[in-house]
Image (cartoon, rainbow, N blue to C red):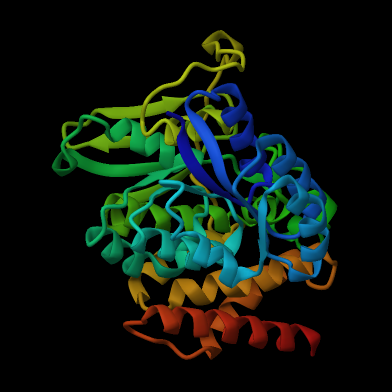
Length: 384
């Protein structure tokens, strides 16, 4: 029997690659639910090809088009964030692939955990925004999380068969993005077009900008803290421009394990979908002889101040990381529209941290309220 999945964010980079794997292994995987944000035409095309029981579009203005095409095919349709969250309780799938970008992944993931679904987690913001709450819920649920992010998948793979008590440090690698060799002064006037030219990875616009600012590494440190129950002081980032070593684990005896592979997300997606079972690849194998040199360097906190937001958020706790994430969503969108400078992304985040009320022990409702308060505050501030 195929393994039934719900794919959230099906039209994005991770979503489309997930469907590649579903097609490659039709005896193993079947899509029960497809959900997308706004790209209704691609969602329709995917639904026609994969015939899920349900297709959901978050943008309610696109719903009529979705229903018009898919209803005659016997495919149920729905729209809106509430419909997406409610769908997580359906009995016709047991694994949720959360490939949405940003805060939008939190509520459906929470509902999926409550329903006892397993989570293939590609949405790092779920644990960034509410890591303590989600971790507590997982401890009380039959759900388990397998990370899809290449860095966290690498750590997950390195930890297989190891005693967690023997882990000394997690080392998360970073490409350094398009501005690794630029000075801070040089990056002051960069454009969105320049920031979107990632040297190694083909990702969506939001994630690519987060890579350029290195806020994605700050988020990955926060995510790793909750995924692997490791204190923040024992998680570090190192710049590795070749993006071949995806992350490493250092053990108390001095041994270091690393997971290597070409920069391609099919491998970690495949590993997560297979529930840590290794499935054969179609992509070319990596040859170490193709890489005469693998280099590593310390990230520059002056050039990339966003990286320092990880220890700040974890030390403060509460809703701090939620504030950072929401402010970043507004700032990145404004940067992509040319309405704020590259350095203005960091400035927008720190301004929100200074002005949004801190909540020491937030509930889920508090996280939701904080997110919306930050969005409104930052949009208003940027208009002025």
